[in-house]
Length: 354
Ligand SMILES: Cc1cc2nc3c(=O)[nH]c(=O)nc-3n(C[C@H](O)[C@H](O)[C@H](O)COP(=O)(O)O)c2cc1C
Image 1 (cartoon, rainbow, N blue to C red):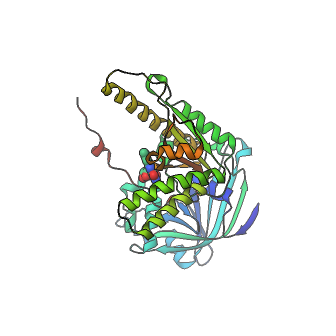
Image 2: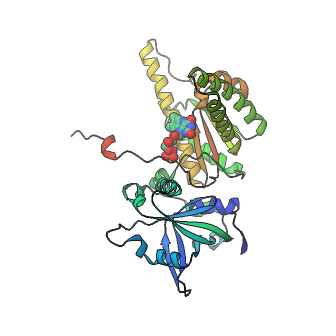
Image 3: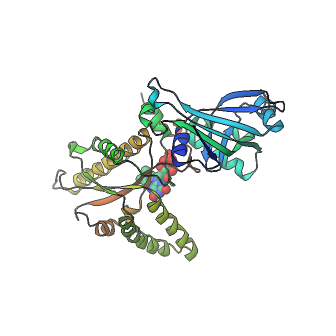
């Protein structure tokens, strides 16, 4: 077991952000311990835990864990993996000081957002009305096979709901074998006539990212300027987008390849054929995102290539018949994404016609 100060290593972070449940240990002034299972979200420097009991049942401040924190802020949180194959056992333990963030405080609302982004169940719970526990890590200890994501394959629906867009990654290499598995998932996407009208470019080298960033940045700059955006805003947005390309260990460029599709004499059917190809590119993209998440990685989607396909082809020296559509980033999330959007209620999306 190794103990180290406040910063989690990339391996510890990657393990912690995958876990859905942890145990929170608090103690009262006399040191009497109390442990409860908790849902949590992590961002570097803080772990947040919601108090989801409704105020009218048990006021949040009456909960034992809260009373303990108010008396004694020293806490410990452990997240672990158990498997019958003991080579997969692992845990991360964070010891630190806890405080209560009151509703209305800026950090409270970002913590609520982070928690809702991770747990869809919180969307329907009024957690914003209660304080949120914030743990500031002091000492971190970990043990075991933190990396063994094979031990924690998810059910499809859990993967679908757990997948999230990640826009900031750890500086941690993605094993080539995992990238291969992600691309294998893309290969199995449904497509019109089974023609698979797509090709993928994988980019990992800094100098290639540089060429891509320059090509897309140039186009975006002129678009933003055309929209009359403030020069300072333009620079900031371009810088953010550029950082995302360099931050992600792996980029997968999804390109449409229409050469093998059916040819029709009329424009309407030809348009339909192209639309189907685009639809199936979306399916391939979703396979990438889901497979990545299932394999313990995270992914993000950047639409920038769609707006300058020729420039991207030129910058990457690709077959000119390819039409770049989407850039998917792959890596290990830096923390739970801070701004994940909630979802519309199902009634807004579905009508039933008997
Ligand atoms: C076609 C398409 C284009 C997208 N383009 C971008 C993009 O350029 N930049 C970005 O940050 N996210 C992009 N996204 C990601 C969405 O913002 C994200 O899926 C949405 O906010 C829902 O969040 P979630 O993926 O975390 O559930 C795109 C998604 C799709 C499907």
